[in-house]
Amino acid sequence: MTSELSAPARLRARLHAARESLRARWVKGPFSLGLFEFVSFGIKQAWACLFGGAMLSLLLLTHLFYPEGAALSRYDFLVLAAITLQAAMILSGLETWEEARVILVFHIVGTIMELFKTSAGSWIYPEHSYLRIGAVPLFSGFMYAAVGSYLARVWRIFEFRFDRFPPLWLQGLLAAAIYVNFFAHHWLADIRLGLFAAIAVIYLRTVVWFRPDEVHRPMPLLVGFFLVALFIWFAENLGTFARAWSYPGQEHSWKMVSLSKLGSWYLLMIISFVLVATVHRGAGGKKSENQQAPRREPR
Image (cartoon, rainbow, N blue to C red; front, side, top):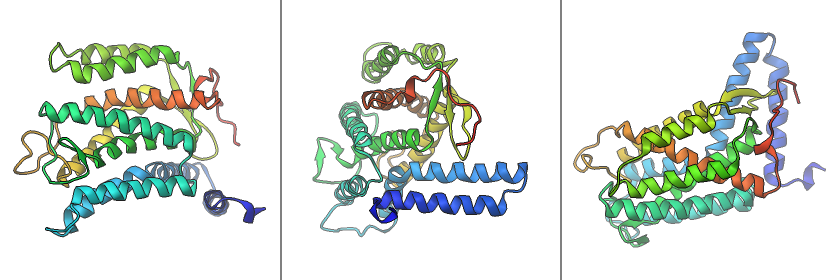
């Protein structure tokens, strides 16, 4: 039977066997159990970040080592590398077609935002390239896709369940308002404080249950949004350090990205989350609508 499994399924089976072997050998009490679960959580997070981590590594490596004056520009190389990476993940089964749908939507949504924001001077892409739309190199859409890839994969890998999950129509209205405000605040009043308040009201009682090892653990969903946004803000600092793009004030020398961008990424988390939740429901799953999540029973 093992030989009939796909390569990703065989890999998961081997990883599961290795984990069980380590658990039997090292887990002897509550402290070692907690440590083992923490390490398992970190490994699963790294696995969920596979596409985003690979893209961030490419940004840094090409910044440090890409040859000056190469026939293929650095940005164009990043586009081709991102396409190759995405195709390899789908064809190998590391990414499902449902997740690919989410990533495609993120790519479109992100590219539209990039076209507007660069025209408004919010940030720039300082290097030359051919594979671009206006001032936006095509690799930029894959950076948004990396966020979608992470959320879709982490949902599946950690087997998300929810308590008091808000109606998707309400979340959709919130996500639409957030997306519109990203554009409209250039001409109208910025309503992000009101959006933060609406997020708090809608998700305050929502708890996500995730499975780092053998049992599900709870976390307030608002905290989860913040942690993801924080790590994306860290990644954005690395991206600007690698000169993949630059904010005003970073044209001549690098400096840390403003903390105000952390709030922007927090808002983007809502759009991202709603898109992924919609795809999960559309695929026939009820994970996003469970009102009584599993507690601490081992599986």
